[in-house]
Length: 281
Image 1: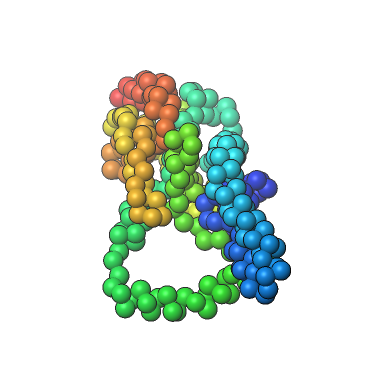
Image 2 (image 1 turned 90 degrees about the vertical axis):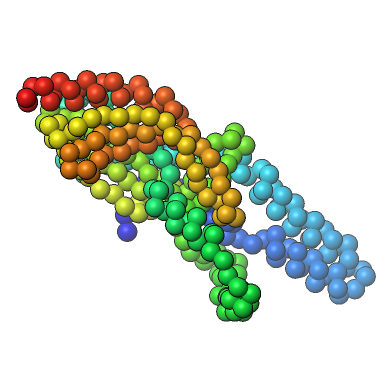
């Protein structure tokens, strides 16, 4: 399994996107009700346990998320630097070979097919008999998972989860980073899809395109819709760079939020492609 740099801070992001692996609030709730049922003398202790469970739950909801948003941005910055270095290694290049113009580095969320799949799964309707059967069948699995979480043995499943933060920025668990390098002879594109919370690389690929095969360099803004786990949508703005290739297998780079980020490099890319094509004519 391909992995990112194993930053210890990712443990907090696992809880941010996939839930806290230690169900202490639930345990405190249950312990509180149990203690209260023993006798009247233990009701005070039971109430304290229940309040402690509520306090931990509220802390996780209202306090830790804000800190995790800052942590997310910090880890993303480190991951992008790691992926830039990884892309150069995978392409077998040295810095002198791609110093014509600055590399284009952009990040976005899970690819469109993953987002569409999430929307379809969320919208799937089930009849009452299916819901009852699935609830009954899931009880053993839930009990085993609950016990494993108590003892700290919990496996997280990578999936597309999105949250809108206190700063109104949308953050996703699955991230795509694209690095485009310009050499004397070719344009090389490295794309990496990974789970920022688990530090797992899901997919990576490298493409090589000759300048003569590039028809045009296009740039524009677009609105992206992502799906929350509850089925509601979040709308966020992004900018998109497209290198149209004669074969139809175009190269894309999308940047979430900072709509002028790619624009600063598009003119340089256009000028370089134009000059290369003219020299080959």
